[in-house]
Amino acid sequence: MSHATASTPNRRLEKCVTGQATRDGDGVKLTRVLTAQLQQRLDPFLMLDQFGSDDLNDYGGGFPNHPHRGFETITYMIAGRMRHQDSAGHQGLLENGGVQWMTAGKGVIHSEMPEQEAGVMEGFQLWLNLPAKDKLCKPWYRDIPSSDIPEVLTAQGVRVRVIAGAFEGVSGAVQRPTDAFPTDVLYLDIHFEREGLLEQPLNPGYNAFIYTYRGNTEVMESADPGPSVALNQMGMLRNEGQQVRLQAQAGTKVLLIAGRPLNEPIAQYGPFVMNTRAELMQAVNDFHQGLFTP
Image 1 (tube, rainbow, N blue to C red):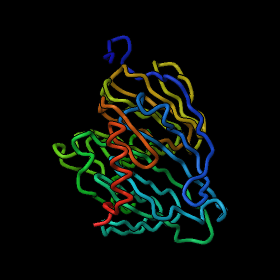
Image 2: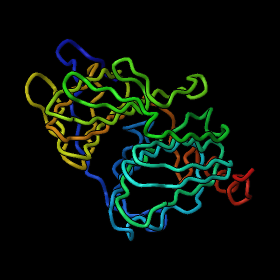
Image 3: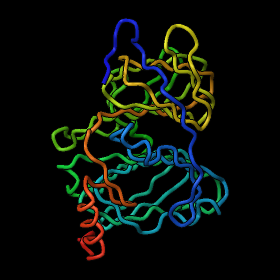
């Protein structure tokens, strides 16, 4: 991958992607932003879904029991209440501003069900791949309430919620031993409380993207205004430059997500993500044999 030079210090916008409307679980209406076609390009990220509605018919069915193996799910709730339960004995309530980080590892069956009958339910679910050596690790789970997510208010009037990684020396809510989980991940929720500019260092070898979920975000490639990532669009960043510079008007909200690629084969069959077809067949067999339940 290319590295930054004096003439290209900033990450440039590669392309914008508009999500695809779909339904999942028991009819939950959502937008699939990061699809299977982009998995290799945005390795280690496998999927990004956005959900958001004030209509119970769009989310009331929730996500009844379903299996996962070989990756992690990161659910970020902007508004609403969702109850998690799984076969490893974990349970928790995900509420406004909270994060649920689950490592499926060798296999888990879980459900994510709304605990509300009215009002807005809005949020994101990101799938993060696991390296081959960790795909069959013990399942892990953590609920992070909104109050435990560090926030930084910059001099430019930008409020940054640090979910994973670090921003201006402040470490994110999720910190794990790097020897057990070597994928370095940055996950920031950025709120422009007034018109301003945000700068964040990025390793040029890391794959990175932004997702604008309020307003409109400019990716500043130089001192001049840069190309825009419009509302409900994902902006993929080129692997060059040592920082990303984002500029936006007051009220804009954008996710910035980056990670070190695994550079391993990706084999997926629905909720199972392994490295080979044989491993996928084994995952399906293990699930049907009841081996996802201790």
